[in-house]
Length: 546
Ligand code: GLN
Image (cartoon, rainbow, N blue to C red; front, side):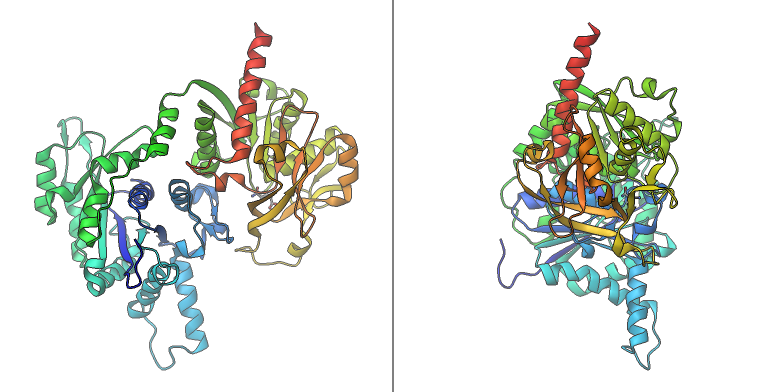
């Protein structure tokens, strides 16, 4: 539907009343519907905090840090965008207040504003507007959906709302604001309450922004009266009041939004063709497999952030995708690595048909991860190690197979006589912590006949990285002789990217993060193979018990 004179349309998604209403999922669902109607769509997230990117944040703060193929460390919502849309996002899709201020201040130092007082309005708001329009101007999308992080009324999101106000004024019909709010159900009164929505819309109006569409998160169905009441108080048409009722799976949301005609209303308001009604056949098939799985496996996910599953968002979603591909429900048993010790490891992992050891940083919980890996290796339980999980597999093998009981990663013990995992050469002189890891997509050549090569069905792959340490190739020969092989090598640097134990049922450790590339329509081959092997292991396991 692209034409030469095409004007990119901008949709803003703001949030009211409370955080965690799912702006990312609503944005991704709308984008999915517009994509199916023939439009090229991308989504951008603006985060109102002062960190330049979330790479320096602990997962307890904002959950997982998602890495794009161009090496940007970004908000986990970008993961939803990629998983729903099957597109690649980039640095331009996630902008923080820190990054906005950094570029304005750099320009001020360069003298770009000589003689002028540099102010929030217009300088900060201009930079916000420039970043919003970049995806439209540079990449020529038909529609750019911009999700504004935080909740309307937060002091720190004010410049963003002001930028939206200005853009709406400048672009008129090419711009649209969707406000996502919450309609609580008061059990005592047996009523859904609209007052918080009225207040949050009022707050937007005070900032000069009239929302065009309201999406109401609710636990119960909205009556026509409730919709009419919200429409009346908030200056929107009744058909622009959209219900977003709680659902079991986030992947149901696009279908609910289709029923509510969110996409049609948005296209009409933007003056775009409605096109053909999306059939979403593959999406519906996928959902059917999630809702009515034929069988079940249990995967133990060993990590140190188990109180906060958002820390492992992409891994959990990749397991769901892989489960659907195998017609299987994947029960994820989050096991706290700090709680594992020699005595209880067998009991803690006894119900696992597969064990996945998670990525991470620092010493906490490391010995528990190593014990879990030893258990998986010795009991032939399918094992998948990701980044730190792969590094722990190397340490475990060095200690318990090669007999180097003092082996470690120099990240945890810089004096170890057997530094089997060591800092990369190019990392040795780096002092800054932000954005300085090995980041983004790198090629990897797979060893013929390895389990990894069979799973991928190809020789050369590209996967995303986020780490400072690596397999220390000085020890490679000893590992190969003892039965752990390099199944994937970076063709340029010769870094070991995948280790495997060919003798084992399925034992693969990867230095990269395959979870970032798993999408609904393209589940990741390693996750799919891991779940498949966990299934056969579970059958053998049950037969043995009989
Ligand atoms: N801490 C390890 C490193 O920096 C692993 C990082 C990760 O798991 N993402 O190399």
